[in-house]
Image 1: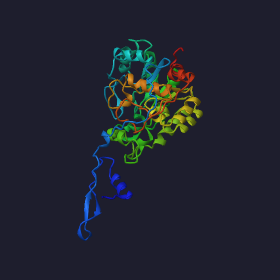
Image 2: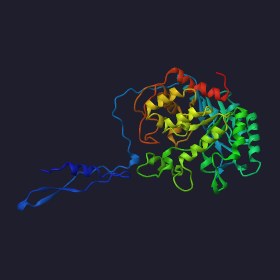
Image 3: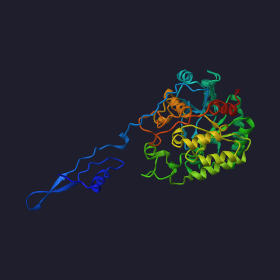
Length: 410
């Protein structure tokens, strides 16, 4: 009979690698035959399986609640219904490309109790006018639009005053706030494709931030990605699969600033402009470190955060996340980062399933469930746990905090 030692068994199992689980062909030996000759006995072969095909099904028997409709009306303060038609080195053009129409999204909004969608990437100039006409005016109250900076004039001497004036015109055209993409700090450079990166706390931008405060326009800003995106894309990186699919999301090396340098620069902007309300998207740019975000919220009364595309982070630390929402219940706004037809990022695909997952996370105490409507978890191979927030906090999160920032009567 073949006899395997514990060490031999573990060695066979350990032969599986991350990229492909390789067949194990090593042989065990057994005594037998004349003169004590030893004969090789083949070991079982392991299944070859690519990691991208690995889709394990949980064997847990736990409650699974379907929340088909939010308990209270919702303002989704972080969605994208259109984008600039093209950009070069972070500098966008006025022309827009739209990924939805009011008619295509309103049925989902009605089913989910979604009162208002805020389209953050509304463009500027003619593009902004087109966005407002397409959504805000076609369905008043159901859509609101933010404008974006005209980065193409950044290198001109009069940019500070011209951008401030542009914001005043955008406000008159119907823009409710300013959206700043992560191109600031990570893409925009002094000489287009060359030159140093424009810093988040560049003094040329101070009049723009001040104008937002004077005009009552909150600033939704994204200046840093998950901490893992600033680390090597290797076997130790918990977002390895995501970065393999989107290598341009990696900001490790080259002349990119560190994650901490970006956040610190943003904090200096918030401190310099106390009359301007800032919404640091994706849970304050740092959902992996709620203690740090909490400390910053305590330090800066004009700072707010949204929940867009980060329930995957919040839901794997449910006790810390619940405490965070309780402590900062007046400073967190609901957001999803939803994009109609955004199939390359499953955690953002607008539709019934996306909102049901968010509502389940915030309203129930369900355990160990998917954070995105996808066969493979797109941001990391883990599951999440519901927070079961009380009604008072839910009302603020879903509606009242955003309504206050946007100047909507509650």
